[in-house]
Image (cartoon, rainbow, N blue to C red; front, side, top):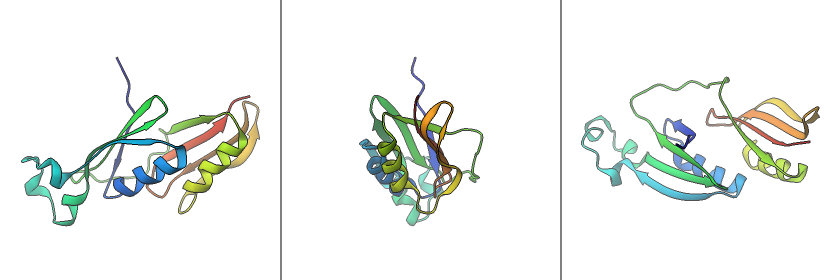
Length: 137
């Protein structure tokens, strides 16, 4: 069994996957638009712009695969209860990743030391995804 984190967007998936690839040194494993997928279940629902939205994408962060896609059939709100935590070895790595992602984000906990981390930051990025980026003590 494998648990695969899945992130959903409302048109921002393509931008998000490239930003996450840059921030975390990831590798895009799959990037398939609705137009390319040509799924008869979705084709009638799509506007011309939505045909270029992402039907299915995969981003590899180390050994972890994250599935990502744009959805045309549900409304999105920011979820504060669930989030992804990215662990780094150094404070500099945390700061570098956060610097890439911080534009348009909402900081929940600024970069700081905690009893369990030499450097931690928690924020909601401009796509509405909540992240924790930290080191361990």
